[in-house]
Structure formats: C-alpha cells, structure tokens
Length: 258
Image (cartoon, rainbow, N blue to C red; front, side, top):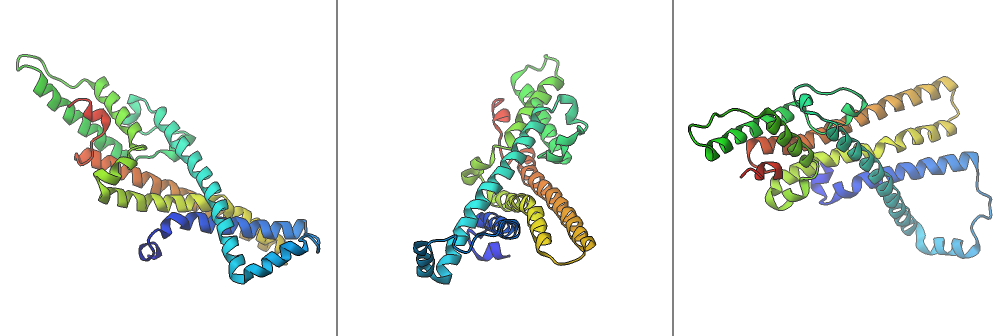
C-alpha cells in the first residue's frame, strides 16, 4: 500500500530496510565484542557531527544504509538469478514433461503450468508454419525435437525479456515489476535477518533457552522469506510465459519462424 502511495518507494524499500538491518546488527555486534575507545573520534570529527545535527546524522546514516543494502541485496539477487539461469540450462527435452528434481529446482523461474502452455503455443505455431509452407500433398506431423528445441529457447529467453516490455507492454511490465519487487524485498532481508537476530541475542540478558527459541523462530522466518521470494520470482516470470502462450508477447524463438 505504501509503495502505491509513494512513487518510487518500491525501488529503495528493499535496500533501505536491509541496510538498516545490517547497520543495527553491526552496531550491536561491534559494541558487544569490541567496544570502541572513548577517544575514537577526534575533535574535527566531533565538530562535524555537531554541525550536521540530529537530522543530518540520520540522513547520513540512511544514505550509508541504502548503499549497504543496495550492495548486499544486489549480490543476493544476482546469485539467485544465476542459479535460475543454471536451472534452465540443465533442462532437457524430457524435462518439459516432468519437472526435474535436485537442489536447483528451488530456483526454477517458471511454473509447470506456464512451461506446458508455452510448449503448447509453440506446437500450435509450428503446425501453422507447416500449413503455410508445405503443399497439401506433403505429409504433416509434429517434429517433437524441433518443438522442444524452440520451447527451450523461448524458456531461456523469458528471464531476459522484461526490458522489452517497458515499451511494448507497459501494463504487463508494471505488474511484472510489482511482483518481482516483492521477490527482491525478501531476497534483501534473507541475509541480514539471522545476523541481526544473533546480534540481538548477544545483547539480551535472558536465559539461554529463550535465545535459542528466538534463533529458531528467526531461522523459520528466514526460510519462509526465502520460499516466498522464490515463489514471487517464479510468479513474475510465469506471467511473461503466460503472455507468450496467449500470443500477446512474441519471443525471438517464435519470431524466427515467421
């Protein structure tokens, strides 16, 4: 709701929240294990901080947190994206019928239904192409290997199609961006959340079992964030795949047959 009220908030939300989490975790851990000496800052630095005032210091901290969150969030998103690409690269024609297992399946970028619909669309276009390029006396039939090859090419292309939608399909891109932004938000929180929980536990004066419960709850919440992130990422790119299956978006693999 806030993202709808404040244009552009979604672009900085993930980095800012993650950056503040990293900052708070670092502050607590450094203060607990390596307290800085009293004279750490010299007189010029103290005068500069005094000149900034409370508002200026908060603004500077926010900018620092934004940079930290942007770097760590981009790193996490890049790793997940590369794993999704690796999953698609290992797909074989037989995997178009049944979903392959293994650890990389967590990072699959498309739903099974979207994959099946794309394949059905390519099969239909392939038949139409045959009808338009062959005579009535020529035997017709589905070349399964060719259909599977075009399907794999189209699926590989889905991860890189979003920039083309900005001009071609702005409404579709807006929905894609919204869903993908939810995925990026969860990716950004996935790493700093357990670190912050450890930092908080280090400062709490509670029994060990209470700290253990807090850490277990954090791990469960972190796992939930990760699962939700992968689901949102899959939902966003399945949206493009369904648009290809509906014929509203054209892939390069399908365009080659026109």
